[in-house]
Image (cartoon, rainbow, N blue to C red; front, side, top):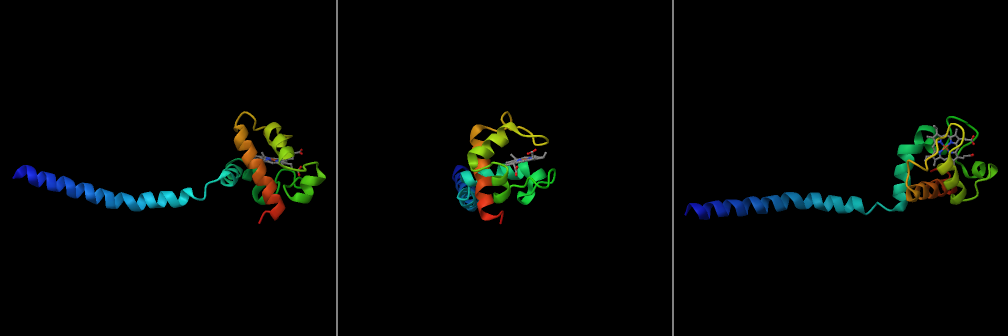
Length: 121
Ligand code: HEC
């Protein structure tokens, strides 16, 4: 008799844990949907670049923004040129070739270029 009770209790706890876990799992799925390489770039930009380039500006050298016209003026004509700058750095801007993976440099360069097209909105 006792064994049956314990079994029933265990079954109940098991069912309860399932109902508690399922909404959490559902949430995980929905946040996962928004992760793609564009999102990776945005995340890296936020952690690595916003100190100096928040909103596509440049707080160190005010004229060297990440806006499209400015990028072009200084010879950045696509993500490839931006990748080179991120890898090698320049002046106060650090080089990222040792701290970011090539795929991460790729993602953040594409993000910067895409944002420049959109006017950082
Ligand atoms: C410590 C401040 C600092 C950080 C952090 C920083 N930068 Fe810069 N960035 C600069 C400065 C200063 C320049 C201008 C360098 C020069 O041309 O002399 C610059 C220039 C640039 C340019 C060229 C802009 C132009 O108009 O000439 C790009 C593109 C760029 N940064 C992207 C990034 C990205 C992407 C990150 C993050 C991975 C980053 N920077 C992190 C300071 C920073």
